[in-house]
Image 1 (cartoon, rainbow, N blue to C red):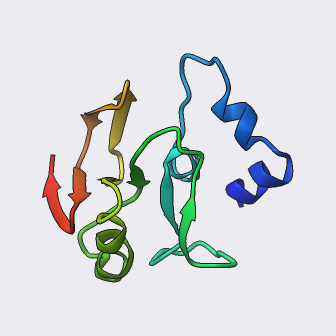
Image 2: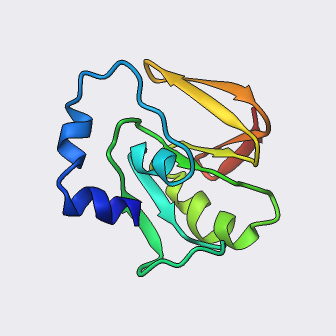
Amino acid sequence: MQRNFMMEYELALPIKESSAKLIMGTSAGAKNMAAKFVCAIENDYEAEERGVYDGLSLDVFSHEPYFSLDKTGLIQNYLLPLSQEMAIYATGNNAAIRVENSDVTVVVGDVYLIADSKMQKI
């Protein structure tokens, strides 16, 4: 829904071209900042189309919030294939990452890096 809102009101380009020093996002906001993201797979949210979407490309990786290792369908069907294109940072509940100049730092919580079809806790 947030992505559709940004597209409907033509907000993507102004956000990308902003001179803002800090842009924050949680949940859908964090997903939309990524280069690509998985939409509403294996969770309780409604989505018109389930799959991989283009984000704003504020980052060169993907982000998967609310991640847990028991989401095997999400991991096998979407995250591992997408990890062939780009790194994915999967954050568990109550986890956060900070991105500055393309450097990713774990702030708190369980964070997994999924890249080249491999997953490791960082």
